[in-house]
Length: 91
Picture 1 (cartoon, rainbow, N blue to C red):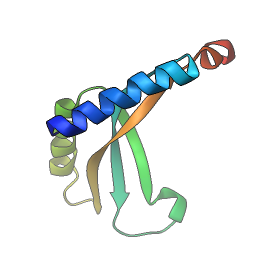
Picture 2: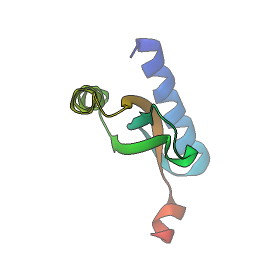
Picture 3: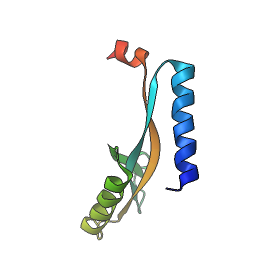
Picture 4: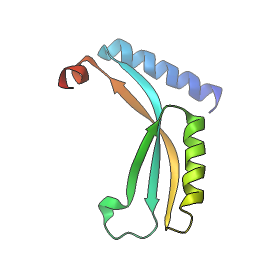
């Protein structure tokens, strides 16, 4: 991830914390995409969330190697995990 991207993420986290009274962290979703669509709802699946980009990239490589012949591909995508006081009350 570039320095500019890291700075933008840090600014987004700070802005959210000030506006919403909560905290936000960037996490990495591991996503599986099925090559053959039998059911559109099953075509794309978030399989897990990791806190580290490096760990996510390693897991994607491992899963792609393991499932090479199974008709699916894995990739990672940055997303946000939002912690708010409302979440705590619902919990």
